[in-house]
Image 1 (cartoon, rainbow, N blue to C red):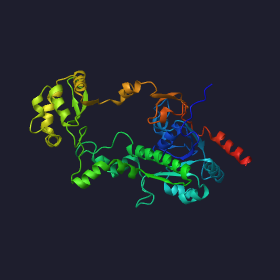
Image 2: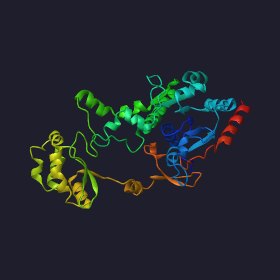
Image 3: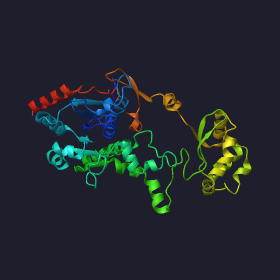
Image 4: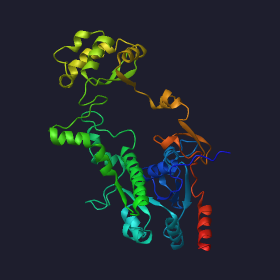
Length: 388
C-alpha cells in the first residue's frame, strides 16, 4: 500500500485562542496544510461565530467556513487547573494564534513577555484591531468599523452614499497576513533558532490594501471617488446592460483594445479616433460622453452576442454573478474544487483552499462541535505528564 502523501505542515501544532473571523481564518489555512490546530473555546458557548446563523443544516455558515480540520477543547481559563492544561498544550505547540483583546491576554498571564519566558520556542501570533503599542490599543474594532476608519468606505458605494464591502475584508486581510507571518516565523525559527513574534492589526492590514489610492491622493493631490462598477483611472472599465437585461463588465486596458472594441465589437471604427476618446486619460476625463456613445451600442446586443464578440476581439469581460448562481459557476464545477466536510449537523461541501503546494491539503477535516475533543486532548496531556 502506498503511504499517504506528506502534507506541508503535518509536523506543526497550533493552539488557537480565537473567535470570529481573522484568527480562525489564519488557523484554518494552517489546518488545511496539515497542521494540528487545537481550538481552545470558552465553556459558555465557545466561539461566538458559532451563533452567527443556522444556515448550514443548523450550523453557522461563518463557523463552517473558518473551522474545518480543527479540534475543539473547552477550557475555562479562569480556572487554575485549566490554565495549567493550556500551558501544557503550549509546551508541545509550535504556534499560538490569539485574537483576544490585549488586556484580556495580560490578565490571563499570556502577555508577550510572559509567554516568551515560559515557552521560548513558541511562535506567538497576536491579532488585534489596532496596534497594541499604538495610540488606541484597546479601541474595539470590528470589520465594518475598520473599513470606515481605513478609508475603504470612501471608495465604495456611490458619491454621498458610502457603503461597506459585502464581505469582511478587514478580517480576511488580517487572517491572511497572520497566516503568511506564521509561516515565515516558523521557517526562520527552524533555520536559525531565533523565535520572532508575529503581530497583526486589522487597521494596518486594510491600510496596506488601501495603499494605491492613498499614494494617489498623497502624491497626486486628488482622492478617488466611489464609482460603482467603474474604475477611477481606466475607461471603459465597468458594467454595461445588454438587450436582454444582463450586466456585463468590460475592461479595456490599452489603446489597441479600445480600437478593437470600437471596430470589431461595436462596428464603429470612427469612434476610436474621436478626439475626446483617443487616449485613456481623455476617455477618463470624458467618461460621461464616452458612455453616451457606448451604452446604446452595447445595449443593442444580447449578452451572448456581446460576449462572443468580445472574445473574438480579445477584450476582457466578466458577468455580474448573483450570489445564488455562484455555486453553479463553471469554474466551481471543475473536479477537485469542493471538499466533503463532516460537521455535527451532517456532511457539507466546502471550497478547496487555493494555493496549496502541489494541491495537497488535509482531506476529511471536520468542523468540530463545541468541546468535541476536550477529553481526548486532556487525556494526551495527562499521559504525557505521567511519562515525563
